[in-house]
Length: 135
Figure (tube, rainbow, N blue to C red):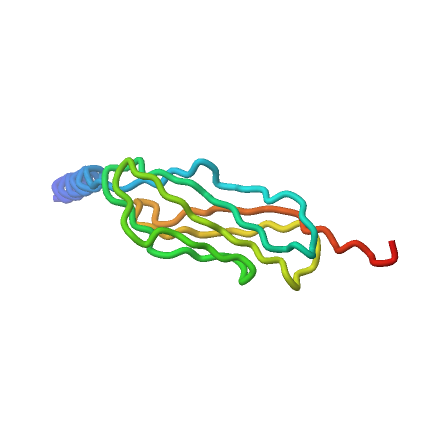
């Protein structure tokens, strides 16, 4: 009886895995996942960059939403589905106004309909302090 139960469970697991393996997903592939904004002055604290991607999967890619790690970072992304083989862009804006100078690293989470339902992008940079007026 135990052998029969074990065999049934094993067959059910194999069937579940093979059904899962046959399901097709979109695959989002970024040209780069980290962009360095470089060093910039505190009195010019807004920086933009663009993450380019391609859907290399077999189904339409849908970006459900984008979440940033800080209120100083915003993102614009395509709202329409991206067909297999098509490309798209996510534009990220960092606004360091009223922030302390120094190095930073911010993350952007991209929630999609891919098999792994989210991925992470990063921006880094160094905002230098304002020059002193007595110099």
